[in-house]
Image (tube, rainbow, N blue to C red):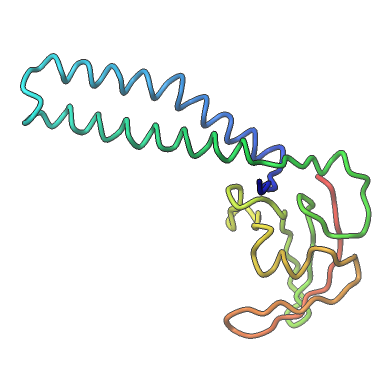
Amino acid sequence: MIKIPMTVEGAESLRQELDQLKKVDRPRIVAAIAEARAHGDLKENAEYHAAREQQGFAEGRIQEIEGKLSHAQIIDVKAIAEGDKVIFGCTVNIINLETDETVTYKIVGDDESDVKANKISYQSPIARGLIGKEVGDIVVIKTPSGAIEYEIDDVKHL
């Protein structure tokens, strides 16, 4: 069985979404189906069909989240002794050597990645280039616009 790495925060976020779906959304949808059934003929009842469709989406998402959590390898980066090496879950500052621009990224699992929040997937080209390297190393990342050189400035376990 393949384990999927996930941070503690990512796992907690999925658990909260699962809790919301099971305790709030599912009962609301069941009530909507019951109400729509009470209106009579189900063949031409748009409310009933819409509620059934919502139920399908919610149940599918519940199964998806439960599957992800069952295959998750939750990594608490705060429990790992800090060092200069870039690993899954750490926050890394990198400097673009061409523009001297500093960027901070947190390396997370696929479900947690959010470029706007500077959280990148461990499978992204940038993260793959950074993982295993140390502070002071120069890393060349291949992008669609060409290769870009970065220097690893700092690694934190936040």
